[in-house]
Image (tube, rainbow, N blue to C red; front, side, top):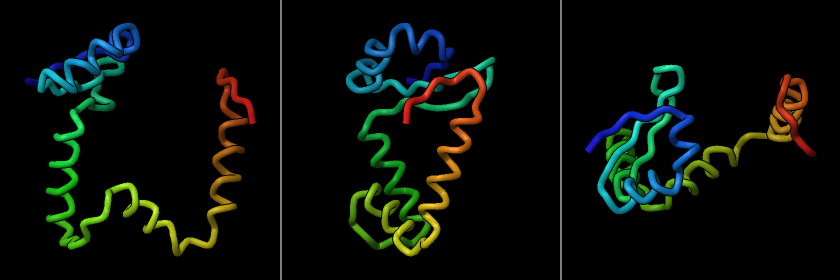
Length: 100
């Protein structure tokens, strides 16, 4: 089953929606100002999607998807610069409190 819901409603009833996604075989598209911005799917659905994606890319690895992400960053030598840039962007963000 597929549902669309606003970010306000998701925030107000997150545990309810998580239960429906996890145990009720429901898929949830989260809308912000009427436009889709995210989706909540069960872990089983996520694994199926990742397997399809890996198959399309021709990946033959059986490693966990998060490990493939880390592996993709292994050869980058500019990670310190990237992290510094992220923190600088967050500090410049107006109306968002952060603690470093």
